Length: 407
Image 1 (cartoon, rainbow, N blue to C red):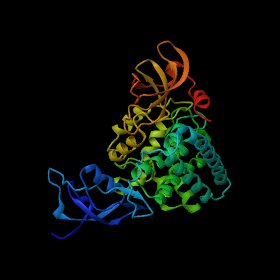
Image 2: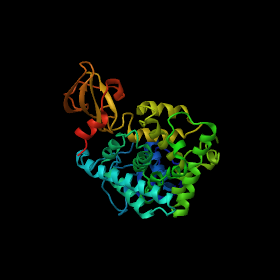
Image 3: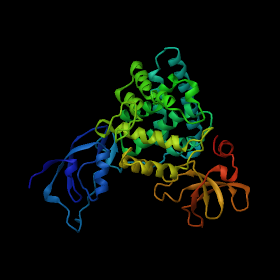
Image 4: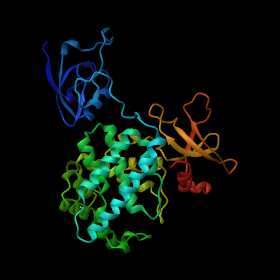
């Protein structure tokens, strides 16, 4: 039987892929190999593969052939002829300690740039596109070296700096999501840049509404909702890409049409906007504010899941949780031993066995020597019990971060 071309949705476990005929993005795919699992097919879809050539005569039976064969795997371009195994998206090329210094600098630069953008908008000036693209590119590079560094910094929340930090955090989360989804560098930069400026329209909202500590009145809420439209108009007038503008203008739209400012429903909400919507809500729910305590990541995941698929895309939520973990880096946790610490390094192979930097003992109610505990180590007889809030033990988490984790 001769080779045939089929769409990616027709690909089934057991088929032999000869070549990739059509794909989007900038990730090459190693050709010739049996696709053994549904997960492998999903991986190809995430790489943007649209059409492939298969050889029907080489379909796998229940017993795999004895000749050496492998599934198609994604590799970075160039070159397409690369034969070694591609890097795992969870692989870290540097230690979190060595990346933290640069990540901290990037974070502060992003906040300063945000502040400058707000000032420019106030005075009628355009936003500097290249400067924001450069920051977004820096985030992406840092995430690929070791995403734990920036992920950790997003958990250091100043209660009075939400407006600046929120957009920076969503941008970092977007870079992490794009990395694990296998998006092209060009698309990742557009998405990360759009996320960095998604709330710029809030500069047009009166401070009395924007910083109000009590519940907004109906009229005030109407004013607040207009920020998404303002964000879209500001980015459009400054010359940002359509994708970046859509993230800014549509991130409060919901799949059932109940969102704002345009009331768009599922078929009119692009995938990149669906991603931004989940990341925006997650960071908002976990943020500590003057008038609101933040949720633990697990509680935030549950809250978003309760609104799937009515408001949010359940597949995107599942992928987001997979790439940052149930206990994201920077989460305060209690171990079964009673020790309290912060998730310092993730463990993609064993998500419930990360490295925890402990500094307090819940049972004895006192601080202990700061120590890293690798829960995956054989000699360690301890495990994660729960995520906790620093208020439970009157802990100054920001002070601990700055003294024990940041350079």
